[in-house]
Length: 163
Image (cartoon, rainbow, N blue to C red; front, top):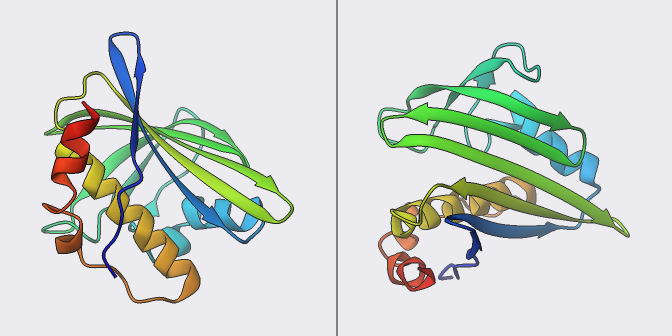
């Protein structure tokens, strides 16, 4: 099955937010565990280690990237089970990401928001996050992990049009 891009670009003055959503038939607390507990993040994103406190920094590992790099991830906000905000600085710049969970009748929507300073690079950033979020879906429902080749460059044009 060919993945379908879901990302939206929302203008916020001179900046923009990349927003992607996924829906889970599960309580928010269970989905929260998937995005915050190192044993569960390791199933789709990568493990992390350290003391996860607001204002603190943990080390996270990107298992689905070349050389599986470790990087510092600062915890900017943590409001279980509804909001996690993190930031990182790497060779591509500074990243500000929020995971927002809302539950209704046992169904949880996860809104992934990357706060962008500019829409430059959205054609590469968007497909990557679509891939990672679909890895989360696969880790939860037991389906086969998707292949990154189905996301990039296939979704590049979609995200370029969002500009």
